[in-house]
Image (tube, rainbow, N blue to C red; front, top):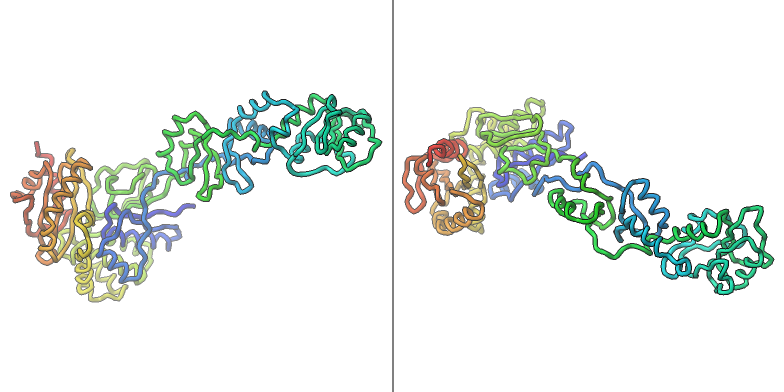
Amino acid sequence: MDPILVFGHRHPDTDSICSSIALANLKNQLGEEAVPCRLGETNNETNFVLDYFNIEKPKFLSTVSAQISDLTRVEKKVLSINDSLKGALDIMTKENFSSLPVIDENRQLKGLLHVSDIANTYLNLEHSDLFSKYTTTYENLMNVLKGEIVSGNYPSGIIQGNLKSVSELDEVLPGDIVVTTYIADGIDRSIKAGAKVIIVSCSEEDFISPRVTSECAIMRVHSNLFKIISLISQSLSVSSIIPKEKFYSFKIDEFLHDIRDIMKEATQTNFPVTKKDGTVYGTIRTKNLINFTRKKVILVDHNEKEQSVDGLQDAKILQVVDHHKFGNFITDEPVQINAEIVGCTSTIIYDLYKAARITPSKEMAGLMMSAILSDTLLFKSPTCTTKDIEAVKELSKLCGETDFEAYGMKMLIAGTSLKNMTSQDILSIDMKEFTMNGVKISISQINTVDIEGILEKKKDFEDIMNVNNEIHDYSLSILIITDIIKSGSYFLAVGEKQNLVEKAFDVKLENNIVWLNGIISRKKQVVPVLMVTSQTLD
């Protein structure tokens, strides 16, 4: 069974990452296999926390879209290059497949064989060139004819000689296969000519033993000559008639949304699927794409689709743990929701530990404490609640960081280091997308003590934000530059809806920027105000 994937939003901050790890840890302790994931690169602050508590960075998750490996129905039947045409036709008829993949001894895909390929081969066969034009084995010949070896040593491997009938006994060459009747003279002449195998059409009581002894294998078949020739044509190996035309095949990890249109437009109805090593996994049809096992996910620190992983519509959302407003959150079935008016998701997750009567380890306690200190800006954010403060006090004792204020300052300072970061990196550290009354907005936020250094990049930020507006159809991009010492923020606003910021906060932008004292929380002090104001814009 696949594990539950636990992850935060697209531009992960410390709360998003630490909450994912802590909740996945809790689920595992409760007997549910869970894996923490991230949807983007971790920032300096988060890296500091993970290094401090010696925790590995969660694996990157690009999408939860359904893949071929998630399909509940995949046809596993395949054909071998060594199979006889009769064997191949029997399988395809029984399984009701018009075509199936052909594999070699190492299960590598060698082609796609259609029923029509077999039918066309039968129609164009000349018995005289059966074994010269096509390939088969002595084993296939025996299996198809179901004959009885009455003398000699029956050979194995690929047939090298030609097929000769009773009317061609004078043309038999060494190594040939002869089909004749029970007439002893015909058998003797074929043996003398060096035939490898003599197939005798007769019943047991009619059979006349040859007068000439040899190593030539004599096979008795209780069928008439016409039937025997027909059966021999069915013994040809699949490898002889694999079509050379190109066909579609897919990898097991390809996404269903990527292959749907290909399958609809293709002339073939069955599509081979291979594993990463090239071996054949099975065959799928268009109707197979309907039913698939959905990946199980838990969302933390977010709930809006725009902020979440690609392909979320294909996943099964088991739970949401969040402290933000709920936007366009719609599910197909009931979901467990743990949401509270607190300053940090980890505060809620710590409650879940308590409810489960599980004491978090030093590492998990440290991660949750760090997340709360980060999201509340050392309790200075207006989103901070008494519950957040009490959680930090308890968690600090569990992780051994009783001077949590000193630790928190180290963490915030580490997080504000913008060394070696480009302007695009800074904008992407913590960027979220919102749609407000039909207006699409991007809001980025950084916390720093180096305000002057950030403002020196103002022109770069503006250029990038203008490009982002055009590419992503944003009407407004905002960069909130929060001074964690002065407890306020600069707002850099770029886009046609700049007046939304001015009207919302009753300020005037000068060269696209303005200082807002006491504004440090995007969630509580910025987004709600912009939401309300957007409804009053023309």
